[in-house]
Image (tube, rainbow, N blue to C red; front, side, top):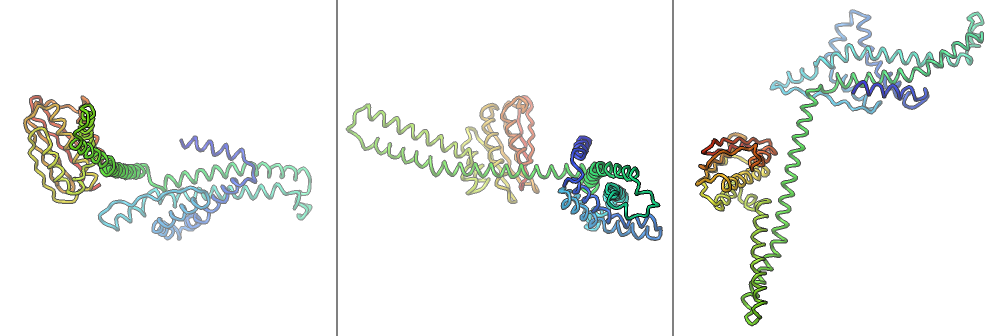
Length: 406
């Protein structure tokens, strides 16, 4: 990828004329880095200043790096993010880890001066191109003994100046590309830091998506409860009133009213189950304990529920725990042939632990595409884990651990 980017940059540099805005931008950008390398140059030539300059550079690594990033951003439009500080219990050690990184020190003490030397060479070539290509205009100011008034010499110098003017934009583009790459590699975060930052961004994005989905589910539940369910209830009441009031209608008409009333009642029951499946109102009104008690009461087999919550739990995690227990009990009723289920819900530190165990036939395998796969995905949506222990003959134990706070 870097070689491809370099090739494209060089092709663009060759195609543009010397007076183009991009050529001047590249030259201006690399020339702005020359003053920052002057102290290191002085330290190399003056051995007495070496220790002092090294101490200043190492101490001021952060502001020097910020200045280089500002030059990249303002003159070249490239944003180089700073490396993240180390997570150290000692704030001073964390600061030293950030300031005295070997990559930044290497940039300011070695790479930066070398790049500035290349930039000075490019600027010198630009100046030489300007002077040589205009030799016809100023050679008459020199004494005749210099030999520059002879037209073959002037022609050769002009040709050399034009060649330098053509090559200088290419060299400036190359130098600018090298500077950008060096700054990204040495002044920006390394690969591990980039991956860590990306993982955190993805985790935040996923948490936001889960919250958004949960909020949308709540909105749909409210709309159905306050809208369609109320209208169906009103319709069922009117049909029931008509069923009890109209006595003199033909039997065929009464049969239609009775069937319509029963259909309306069935639709209300189905819609109530749908609303409860989207987001149970009791979970938001009375909490996870009461919501799980409702699930246990409606289960088609005996359920012993043990809930002990000692800390706050995020609403999204509560919803995941509720639906996990609900789906697990549904799976037990369908497949396990169990006589009893034990459900334990407890908070341990910052984790919520769910244990669902039954006395059924066992043999549950998440890899066979059963409902356990959906349970595992639901737990993973909030950074939770699910494990299944189900030997043939039973019992089956499902253990789910969820973070209390996202």
